[in-house]
Image 1 (tube, rainbow, N blue to C red):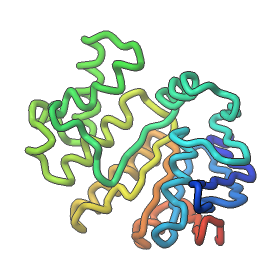
Image 2: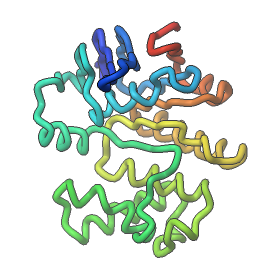
Image 3: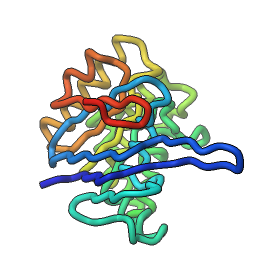
Length: 223
């Protein structure tokens, strides 16, 4: 079963003076349980591609199908609800909320899942234990290392039990030791839990740990 299908997807950014082609005629099919790495030079459209896969952005042309559901006709509200149930995001800069502690950050997506307070606490604690952060529940993001912050971000991404994880340079701000730990955690989520993972990376070694690599150049698939 294809979890993600992109058919003839293009994305153009326009201003009054310039037109920038970010993606052109992209055709990708990613199966359930695959771990796919997206590679290419900076500015080639990798993050735009991830945003379109995760319904954070809409293509200028073409079709995006997630879990067999065509998404082009979804209203913004329905797309947001579908995204919250289906996709988890992991970002290079973590995007944790500075004023909330670790437990509260992981609980945040569960507010939109309609989960009761008690169940939110239980789910968040389970996830933080899974990523090795159960000893930091009351710490603020400013009190965490980069690796710890990314572990919390991964726990948050899994909060609503999504089938798909989209990771945009998840080790880009980490040293080699922490990068290896985060990569191992992602591999475990893929291999043991069967989550479909799409990861943008510049790291060839990490990319070759994925099931396959899709390379981009100037908004086009080249491999």
